[in-house]
Image 1 (cartoon, helix red, strand yellow):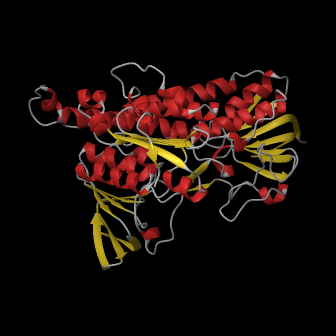
Image 2: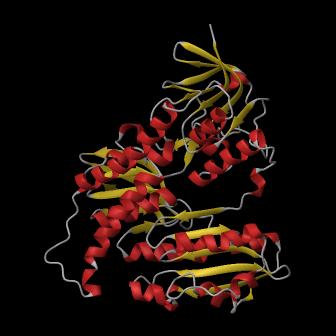
Length: 459
């Protein structure tokens, strides 16, 4: 006999637990299904553990630069990878435990820990049980894409998930992929002490960014001793003793490279292939992403898809916003929608890259008349004081409306400063509001009004 609920939530990533709380507090009887680790990617293999590792890597990097600040450290700086991993596990574990504890103690909520598969549009099998509900929310996240490379099934390789188990220092970490995952792991392990090589099939790193931003990131990483190969495709891999050997193809010809460990960072795919979505009639695209409308409703009435599995965003903050959109429409009679969301994200190398709104390339493609302001971090007093002057600040505004179009801040504090521009984009305020504001000295943010006073037409 099936067990009836008002709502079923499949997956406990960023959107699921918050939605469970809202629905349960509204009086609905809610079932939450989690097949493995509570908290999803962010808590277990993404944001929280990786940024904890980034912090350890930054500490090692700063210690090696201590003499630049007049601080003497006797002897070499050594990194204890077991302690680094233990710190990461403790912080990540606290978050995971908190999510699970909150759900298991939530009134009107029942937690099932097993795999979920649809039987029909309103029936879900969980182990030996069958649950039914008129409202079902899919929040199953994604995982690393494993590229089709000959020999890959015969070698040991790492992904962002299995990197969480590493408690040693790889002698030579070779990374396939030059975007968020690859670059963040690449810099942190170089700072831990590994030899690092990044192999990117495209002509530049982080291809969705402007060319000058990609070039600046490449220069920062190469200064730290990371080898970067662009326009390079991996055509085959093989295990030779303790090394993984890669066959590479470039416009200049073929070559080989060997490394002690291989990290696959070539994109992500949604966890939708084993949910029985066809039994529910839910349509997915050619990549496996669930099709949704502007309010995150799928093609089947009563079923929604939130988070990474819907292809509308690949970040914790977009997943949480998915929850807000669904809750607002269902419970608050507030017609919020995905298309109101402004693109914003950070790349957590050091210094970080904060991005919001449009790139210069996107502005040109849209045919907008725009002005641009830019300043290198070498002319930002706060960056000079901290001894961290790599990068730049750049803002784009529309000529006619005077509204912000976008910004990129690659530099110390860029991951926080970017929000000052993002908020004004949401407010649809003219840039003159910020230009006339009195910002605090000495900060990175204080240079934004100055830059806005030096705008030039975008070529």
